[in-house]
Image (cartoon, rainbow, N blue to C red; front, top):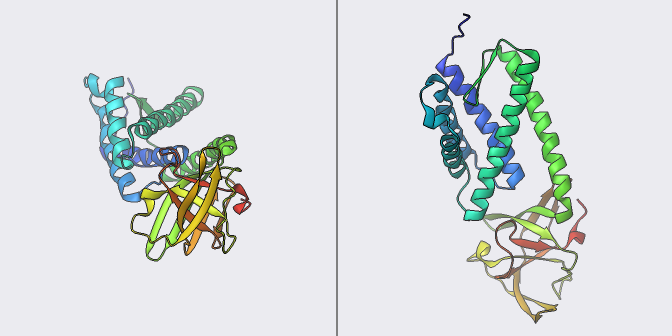
Amino acid sequence: MLMTVIYVDVLFIVNFFITFFLLLVTAKLSKRDDKLGRCVLASFIGGLYSLVILWQNLNFAASFIGKLAAACIIVITAFKFKTFKSYIKEVVIFFFVNFIFVGVMVGFWLIFKPKGIIINNSTVYFNVSARALLISAFIAYILSALIIRIYNGKTAAKELYSVTVFKNERRIRFFAFADSGNNLKEPFSDYPVIIAQNELFDGIDCRRLVPFNTIGGEGVLFAFKPDRVEISSSTGNATVENVYIALSDKVKKGEYQGILNPKILNI
C-alpha cells in the first residue's frame, strides 16, 4: 500500500494560512473590522488544530462538537466579542466558508485525484510545490473576491456602508445604514448629517444642535464636525469633509451603528 509522508511543519503552515484566509473572508461577509494581530493568533490556533489529522483515534477533536468548539475559539480570538448575536453570526459564517472551502477541495480531489492533496478529518494537506501553492492561493483569492462582490451586491439593497470618522487624533469606524429618509442638515452650513450611536464618540465635544422632525416626534441632536469621513462600500470609496456627525442613543445596535443620507456621495 502506498504510504504518504505528512510533514508536521508543512501541515501547520498550510492550515495556518488557510485559516487566515478563511477569517478574512468571514470578516468581509460579516462586515467586521479584522485586526491583523488577532487574526494571526486565531490562525495559529487553526494551524494547531489541523494536527488532529495525525491522531486517527482522537474522535472528539474530529467530531462535529470538536470542530464547533474549535471554530468558536478561533472566531472569538479573531474578532473582539461585541454581542452574542453577532458572535453567533460570525461562527455560522466561518463554518459556512469552511464548508465551501472543504467542499471545493473534495470536489477537486475527486475529479482530478491530485497526488499532492490529502483530505482527512476535514483537514487539508498540500504536498505540492511552492509555485503550485501560490497559484492555487491566487485563484482562491480571485474566487473569494468574486463571491464577496456578489454577496455585497445582494446586500446593496440594505445600503450598508463602512464609515470611518477622523477627529483630532481619534479614528472611529462603524457600519451605517443608508436611509433616504435621513435628510438632516446642519442649519448654519447646510451640510448633510450622519447619525451615529453616541457611545462611539465618548469625550468628543458636540457644539452644534441639529433639529429633527419624525413621525414619533421632534427634537434636537448634538453634533460635531469631523476632520474628514471616509465612506466605502462594495462599489467604491470616497472621502467627505463637508459633513456633520450627530449623536443619538436610538440608532440600532448590532449590524449597523449609524444612519446616513445616500445622497451624501455617489459610491
